[in-house]
Picture 1 (cartoon, rainbow, N blue to C red):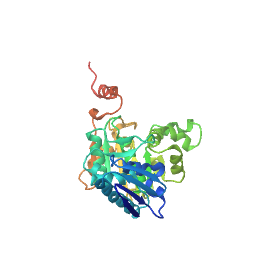
Picture 2: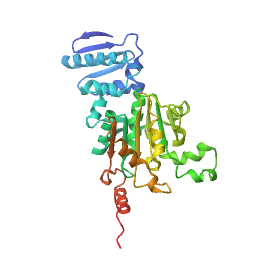
Picture 3: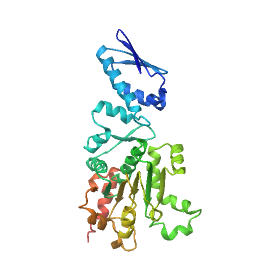
Picture 4: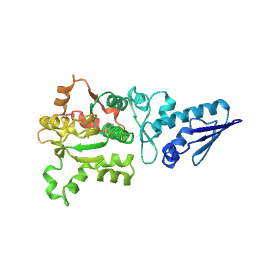
Length: 321
């Protein structure tokens, strides 16, 4: 990188570097970077950036930009999170780990996905501080959505190689034979909530590519048996529909550098015998193990339509005679 200075103006040259490596697709990274310097006029032309403003601002701009370029030399790709880190003084992971309001990931419309309440922040913090997180609570609290957002973030930042999402196919079990199509066609409707969350965060074409090459896998829980899952974020959804043996089978799939998130609502067990649910039993067995965290959501943490919390409350209260 070469810098040529004149009065109140500088030109920053990337030299032989490919500009997209620093600017990002659609110039998103350089636009994010420049947003931190509202008093500096920056004009990007090819591999050169011409900046105008106060000398102190230009000096800081070039210093921070040099740090950004240096980051590119130490990792495969830059993201907007690298820009955030430059100016926050701590990494985005550290912001999230301490419960500070911060962006987890951007959705396909460019809108930021953040923890929306204290319990979601607690879940995010637990994810960074532990390798296994249980997120328990009623429908509508965002347990699965936040879990998938964290997984997508880790994939985009190349912290993991795969995202694996699974559910126990309890409700579909006895009726699969009556549904048209192959096994995937039969199971897709049951797994649709997972597809919906992923579709919010990853463009459709890219999501299709990820699913075709195995970067993102969605499968019923039975397909996890015998696997060792390394460098992956693995999410078990609707875990209240697992028995203790199934839960143990799932948790023992954990390989090196893996993160496991288990979500469930103990009040919505679909097993023929509700006492067979192993979710709370498993949580109780693992509660004193370092590296395992449990986050319990309540009706007050529901983030869907305001009526949802009232509906949940109505169905959990005992009926009046």
